[in-house]
Figure 1 (cartoon, rainbow, N blue to C red):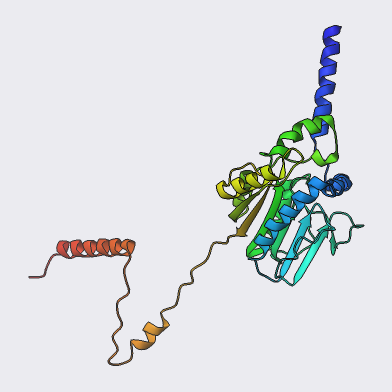
Figure 2: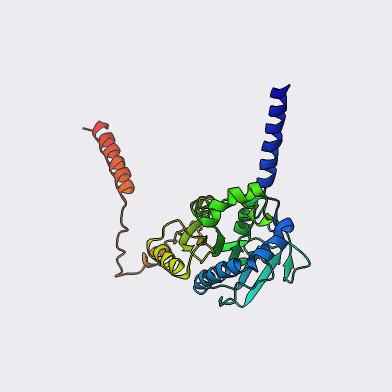
Amino acid sequence: MPLFRHMRWAKQLAHTVRRRQQVVGLTHTSAALQKWFSSATGQRILAREQQEIDKALSCLFGYHLLQMSALPNEMLYKSSRICHCCRVSFDAKQPAELASHFEALPLADESVDVTLIHHALDFSENPHQLLSEVSRVTIAHGHIVIVGFDPVSLTGAIKPFAQLANISPFWLRHSLASHRITDWLKLLGFEAKETYLGHSLTPLMSARESKIGASLYRNTQLPFGHFYCIVARKTVASIRPIKPAWDTQILNGVKGVKIAPRPITAKGAARLSLIRDIANKQAADTPRDS
């Protein structure tokens, strides 16, 4: 009996751990997220994220910009030169231009030039579907900017223990590293252009230590920042049109005009040599009339 009792206790413990590590989605964690970002630490990290977002958006152009943020009331695109900017909110009560699930956007295919994803992947129940939906609505050669918490950081190291303690729904998020996001983007036809690793002051660091750490991360690009900012471009295979030989056909009938021969590729030269060898062999095998 004691053995079965211990097994039952172990199963209950494992079930509790899995339940506390499960991502419940933005609809359930929105209030906790806004409360955390309203704190002193959250405001400092949000200010550093805004600096990196401003640098990324200042070099991107287009007609339409879409913001998908865990904080739908924030306007993170103020530095963008794009005139038409739209925020998507997962909650209809939030002050945003569009209310919709991030995994099912009510937009036409290839209708957005730039998409800003701000911590939406961290708290999404299906981050693969979210990225796939963003790829669908992004035009060819369009850009996406992704901001997420770096699991290889101080906050990333605290997250497993905070999930077990069940401190706040803020810790119920995915641990998505920047290289993992880059691999997902490659499968969707995106090419990562730049990756910024952000660093900010935390309650465990002094202002001098934070300044030294920020300079170190900026110069060495070591994967130990509190957050990352990825700028990716949607690549499309280009098609080379074949120009018809209309000019050759027209100029062939003009007197005094000579048409230069077209360059022959290695494959074409080999094929032409083979044809000549066959023709010479046939000519040699053909009996001559006496």
